[in-house]
Every structure is written in C-alpha cells, then in structure tokens.
Image 1 (cartoon, rainbow, N blue to C red):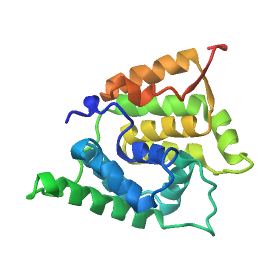
Image 2: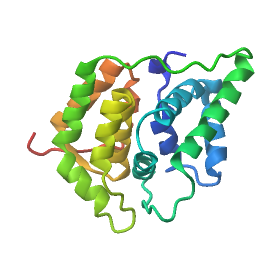
Image 3: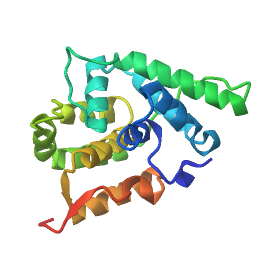
Image 4: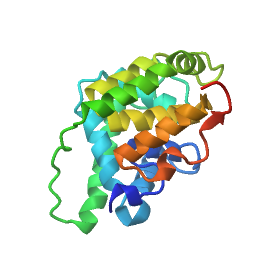
Length: 214
C-alpha cells in the first residue's frame, strides 16, 4: 500500500497516537495491533521507523525522551518501564512477523537512504520557530514533564530522518496541545504533501490552530 493511502498517522509516530486512545492493551499488544492494522499495511512503515532509530547514533536517552513526549508521559531516567532500544527491537520483531504472514520470504533489509536536505532544513526551521514555547510546555508540564524535547527532535531530523522527525514533532505538538498559528498550520500541511502523506496525517483534528499573529 502506498503510504498516501494510509489515512491515519503511521510508523512510530502513529504508534504513539494509539497510546492516547487505547488503554486495555499492554504496550506489546498495542504494537501487535498496530502492525496488523489495515491487513498489515501499517507494519512496513512501523518497522522502517523503528529500524532507523535502533541503528542510529542517537543515545538511548534521546529515544526515551521522544517516546515519552509523543505519548505524553513523564520522563524519569530513574524509573523507566523499558529501555528504548529494547522496545524498538520488540517493535521490529512484531512487524517482521506480521509482514512474513503475507511475504514468507521477506528479506529484512535496512531502510532506504534518507535524502532531500531541503526537507531536512524545512523541518528544522519549523521546530526552531516554535522551540521556546514547545520546550517550555513539555519541560514545565506539572504532570507529564519531559526535558530536552527540542534538541532531541533536532537530532532525529538531522541524524536519522527528517520525515520521522517531522511526524514526531507533530505528535508532540498534538499531545501537549501546543498552539500554532494559521500560517504554521499551512506550512505543516505543505510539508506533509512534500513528504507524500495523506492529508489526515497532519490534519487529524488535534492540532491547536489559533487565529493569532502569523
């Protein structure tokens, strides 16, 4: 399936959205459900994101920070339910098992190289435009505080994949209800089109678009 036909947020960013809407499953059961969505249509993009992060040079703490921010959960380095890289390995295993139901000879190749530095720069510009407000909102939340979200997002964009970085950025904005302007909203939609998303990946009704100075 072309990912433009996936009308919900996909990949790892999409999995984090499931955590805000389904509560009766364990984390691993939720990953299994996500990988099975759309008769397995979700599994390849989820696997690709997980492999990119797993094999990236990012410290595991950055992975943990971004996961917590995307699911709106307090980050406490001394109280973690799971090591971030161990979690990614489990996600990869779940996805490959689901893919092999349809493609028994599936060859678990690494993801395609990331290209288009223009898109990387465009995503970085959007993160930095709202950096102060985003960092303050996530770090100072009285119940779900997560530190260093902005530099962690920047590292994903520059060192891993601007596509994944942009989707995680959107997910954090939505999770913490960070207000954005109409012009920012328009630019996010344009970036989504350039990445080849279905329009509902960006515009799922949870971005907090405010009619303020643009």
